[in-house]
Length: 130
Image 1 (cartoon, rainbow, N blue to C red):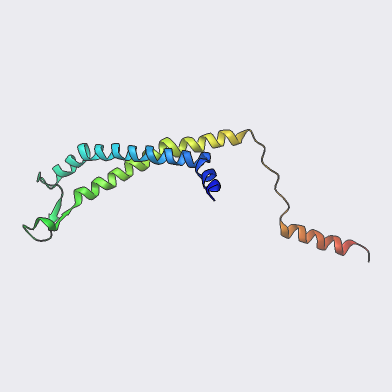
Image 2 (image 1 turned 45 degrees about the vertical axis):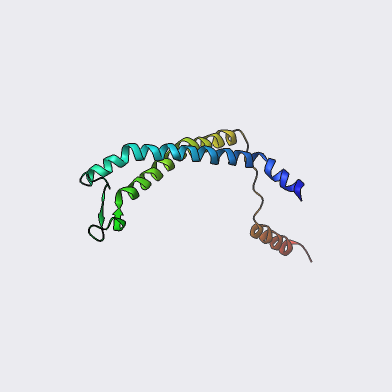
C-alpha cells in the first residue's frame, strides 16, 4: 500500500505539478501586490477620492453596507493579468515545443475504420463462389 503511494509521489509529473503550484502561488502574490499598489489607487481615484474607493452604500452611514466595486475590479484585473501571463509564458511555449517535437515524427498510419472493414467482408463474401 505504501509502496504504491511512494511511486505515485515520486513520479516526475507530480513533482513538476508541485513546483508549478508553488511558482503560481508566488506569481499570484506578485500580481496581487501590483494591482493593490498601482491599479487599485487609480480605481479609487475614479470613485471620487474617498478612502473606501469606488462603490456605494446600501444604507447611508452604515459602513458594513458599502458595496466595494473597486475591490471587485481589482480581483478581475488580477485574474486577467495572471491568466495572460500563464497563457503567454507557459501555454504558448509548451504548444510550440510540442509542435517542434512532433514535427520530426511520422504520423502513425490509421487503421481501417470498422464500417469499411465490415463492408469489405460483405463484398468478399458476395464475390466468393459458394
